[in-house]
Amino acid sequence: MNLRFVETFVWVARLKNITRGAEKLCLTQSAVSNRIAALEEELGVMLLDRRNSGFRLSDAGTRFLGYADRLLSLQHELKNDLGVHHEAQPFSLRVGAVESVLHTWLIPMVDGLKKTTLHIEFELTIEMTPTLNEQIKRGALDLIFSATPAVGNGIINEALLPLEIVLVGPKSMADQAELRLDELLGYDLMTFQRGSQPHIALLDALRNAGAGDKHVHSISSVSALARLVESGFGLATLPVAVAEQLIQMRDTICILNTVLALAPLPIFASYWSDPAAPVLKQQAVDAALAIAKGYNCGTATA
Image 1: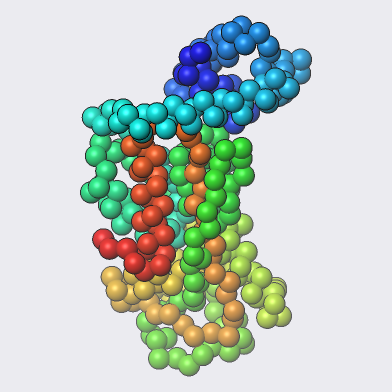
Image 2: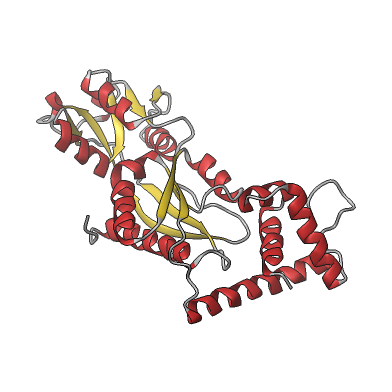
């Protein structure tokens, strides 16, 4: 049995779509269909239920998926044991993250991987959580750091430490005492994109404080938020690590004391369980997770 055909079936089953499976494996749709047809002929059963227009595994296909995962895992174990690593071959690691992670520990993580992993090529995507989760479900990314876990057959999620959120203002407010709610409401308030976790958290905090009708501006980037705060346009919510980094770099904003209780930003690492992945690629994912966890705990070094 050709294990490349088995791997093709696994990805089509996981992604629930022949086209997405073809994109994931860099194959044509006809090549994917031919591989699955060859498996069906060899096994003597139909693996896909082709009676309806939507994607569905047959009963035999559902049972075979478990065997297929085990076959690929055994192949991976065999290569590890015999040292068949193909060390000289470059590989691409496709990483996605929300912007808050970009401005905290994503760059040190990438730099750390570059120093320790030979032949690695990065593809970095910075997007909102819904987009990242959809892209990894489609097989377009290998590893993401987003505000909610991605849901999909074969996707593993790990909760990282959340990012503390603070309110920032221009440096002229640095010596100001704790802002009362009525004082806070006298300023324009800004946060990330509408529908993002920080946006929802700020609206919830205002609602809980009895100020649910307060207008909140939605800004798409950290740098734009910082510039607007510097200009005196209003106050903004930012992860504390991002705020501290901006203060160190520009010294034009400050972290404010406020009665408003801001929920932290949850961060989840989501990645594919891929027993057919090259050994070096799987090691890179493991190393990326270790570095991310180290920065979360304050133990990593640049």
